[in-house]
Image (cartoon, rainbow, N blue to C red; front, side, top):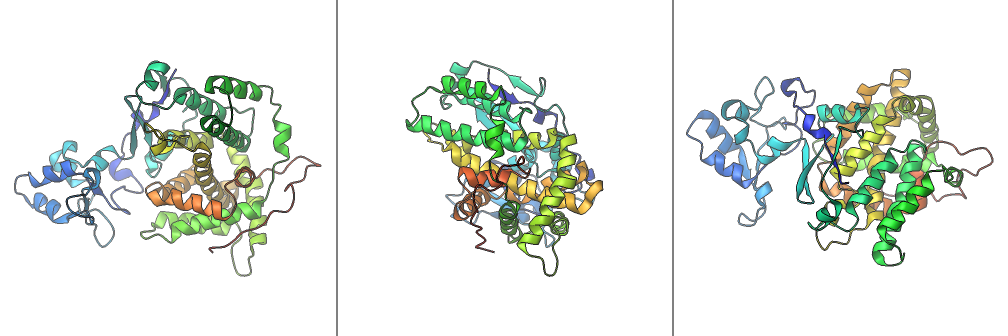
Length: 428
């Protein structure tokens, strides 16, 4: 049966109580319909301020997309001029929610149409959304997801063949605690590469038959031994995390919360005069083993929920464009993008855990994930830049992605690196 997210329906904005308002720190798009509504308002001081604060899209006036027809001209403090002193939207206060632009009315909800029906994920750039998603120990349990409709009927609505069974297999793998989380993700990469081979015709097997065989191979836990031989290289992993974080820091409008996150991360990995990548990697590995790993062993649902929401938010493993009729998605590339996002957040969390040590708690997780998400979820070029960085560093293949995923040391007698890796640090 089709599996759809249900948890986003319980989201409620906490308004002025929010510690990081969505009305500050980025641009606010105004769709064409909202623009017309604002122009049609009766004369008033607020109507004048609204119209004077709207700036048409920089592209040619006749070709601007309806969803981003215009933008709000932010104040010198990079805040929406419609935000009141009590940190509430004056448009909504005076005219009601119906007058909000589409972006303001739906955020942090990410709305997709799948098989003719809408489904909603959440952007974790909103602190309350991050709490709702990450801290729910039953996000993937009955009641949090709904199964509806008929698979064949849904696929007749334009979905790629096997969409629902593939989504079910992906979610089942993320929830399979018979394997460590990094192992589940590595196996997910195998799943994506095999599905690419089926799509290209290199692997002559139907999707249902392949998925049955794949899921059967997981049941005995016989794959643990093979994965013990996968590489562990904290220096190379940290190098990529630093470069991804650096990409974000070079953007404009870096928010104080993200600066705080980076400061805790860098201190947590021992940054300071005379630090080298090797010394930072040693601190990074120690922070993982002493503080990060014990916390998430006690709260395994947090990172699982992060991945589940990303799967729905990004329409993994098809991608937002790959689900369109006639598209040819490259699922191995979507897996690399998922891994890049996860590796960045995990790396930041390891450093933050090293900074707070025994005091590392769920509040620090929410702060880190939310602050970082606010900088990369809303920048479309971030994913393409991430993939380019992984390709440049030769980390986009199975071995490189395994290095990004794995921090636990292998069992005694297993080589940790399967040969000496080439450390690539260009672009820093």
